[in-house]
Image (cartoon, rainbow, N blue to C red; front, top):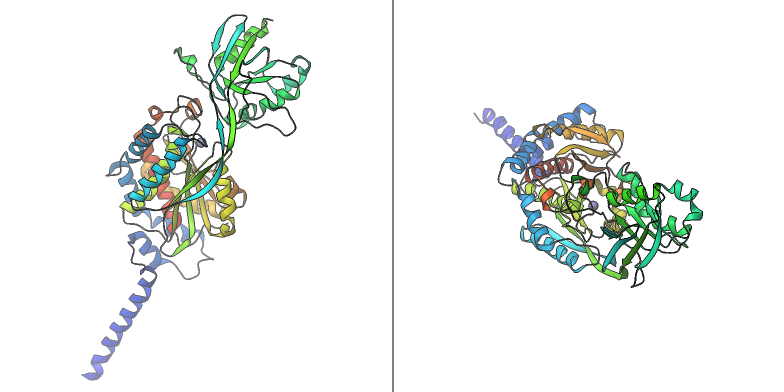
Length: 496
Ligand SMILES: [Zn+2]
C-alpha cells in the first residue's frame, strides 16, 4: 500500500506548489479584482509578442469589473457624488484665479478632502503668475452714451486712473487691421471677428493687443470668443468672456479687454454707417510678483508596478468670474471620483492611478509644465496621461492620441463602456496640461462631451453650478474610471 499511497501525496504537494506559484504575484496584501486575477492567470509569459486577439481577450476579461464600476458610479451608492462634491467645493470657495487667496483655499480644501478619504495625497510647490483685475469699465461716449459690459483680459496692463478715451476703429480680422493700419494710430481697435472655432478664433484674444499696438493703437476691445451670447436670448444680462492674452516682446503693452458679441456687432454696424464712435476704457489691472502655489497629487499605488503611472487630471484654478464649476471644477471632481470609485470597490490596479489637480492652467499650463519638467526623467513610466478640461456634460467618446498599436488596445477598452453607450474612440486627445507629455510620445486621452455649451459659459460669469448636471457627471466619472483602471491593470503598458 505504501507504493500505491505515494503518488497521490506527491501529486497534491505539486498541486499546492503550483497554486502558490500562480498566486505569488498577488501577495501584496491588497484587494484584487476578479478580472485582474483572471488576467494574471491567463496571461502568457511572453508579454511583448502578444497578438491583437490576445489583447482583445485580456481586455474583455474586465467586462465584469467595468460593470461594477459603472453600476457604482451611475446607479449605486456613488451616484451624484462628483456633482455633490463639486457643488460643495464651488459654493464654498467660489472662483480661484492664479495667485489668489481663494486658489490657496481651494488647494487646502482638496488636499484635506482627499486625505480624509484615506487617499495618499501630497502637494508639489509651483511659482505661479499673480495678475489682479482691479476696478474696470468701458463706456461708449459717441455716437450715444451706453455702458459696455466688459472683462479685462488676463495679464493685461491697466489704463491711467482717468482711463483712455479714444475714437474706435472696428475691424473683422487681422488682415483687415493690416490693410487699414494707417487708420489705427491713437485709436482703440475693436475686433469684431466671427467665431469659427475656439482653437482658431482665440488668436484674437491672445494676440489682438500686440497686433493693434504694432499699428499705433492705444487699447483693444475684443469680441468674446464664444459662439453664443446671452444677449441674444433677450435677457437683461450680457456675457463678456475673459481669458489669457500675450504681449509680444518688443511691442508696446496696451490695455486689452473683451466685450460682448452684441456690443462688438453694434459698433461694427455703426462704423459701417460711417458713424464716429468714441469709447472710454478704464482698467486698474496689474501684475504682482509671482505667488506660491501647488499641484495637488493623490494616488492609489499600483500593487505590481507602483512606479508606472496612469495619470488623471483637471485644473483647480479658474478665472476670477463665475464659479469655475465647468472650467474646470468638473474635470477635477471626476478625476478625484475615479480614485474614490476604485477604493470603494476594494480594487487596486497593477500600476499607480494618480490624480493631479493642476495649478495655474489658465495662465498657460504653468503647474503642468513644471510637473512635466520635474517628472520627465521618468517618462517611460507614464503609461497614459488623461485630462478632462472640455466640460463634463454627456460623454460621447474618448479622444485618444497614441501609436496605432495603442489605438487598438484603447478601441478594446472603450468597448467596456457599452452599458453607458460611449464606446467611441476618437483620434486626437486634447488638453493644455497633458500636451507636453503627448508631444513627447506618451499616450494621452481626453473626454469628448456632447455639447457646444462649453464655450457659451467658458471664462464668463455664466460658469456656475447651474450648467452642471449630476447624471452627466456620473457618466463622465464612470467612463473616466473604467478607462483609467483597466489601462492601469493590463498586463502590459500601452505600446508607444
Ligand atoms: Zn480649463
